[in-house]
Figure 1 (cartoon, one colour):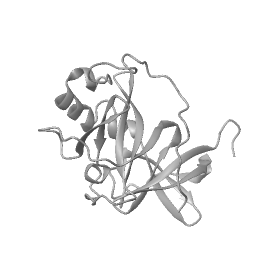
Figure 2 (tube, rainbow, N blue to C red):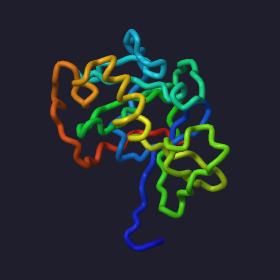
Figure 3 (cartoon, one colour):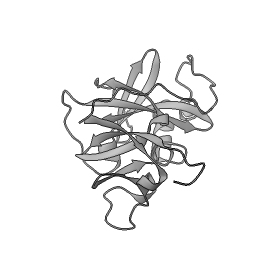
Length: 193
């Protein structure tokens, strides 16, 4: 391993039967699934919003967004709340997962470039393929999927107005005006498969 390269942790979870991963530093928490409040006229992938300790959190169905299909809610369905930078502010966005997999540690040598062909998920949404034993899983680029310039940014602006599209919860709250800074969120609790 090259000097200066560190091992990173990733949380794996399942959407549309596919194992996906997100860097654990971008994950705020994992909460039990609850039915979101629908937003009239919102994009199909935006299931609605939930109230998470006084903050409005949009809930995104990654299965629909990534073309993996919509799956029914089960006892294992949960919401992975990720931190996304929208217009310079950190915003919590919940993504629906069929179940959580595990927390894995990967070195740069364990991450392969995604192939140009044959991926079920659009290329700009994947920053690499994590390698574990004989299997691979896509590592998602949270900002490309959910951040500024993404479809979600426009959907948030339409559903909540420009204040929320900039990362400010409607009606203010403790995160209002919070600048994007590198933070180390609590490590989420994951149940190994």
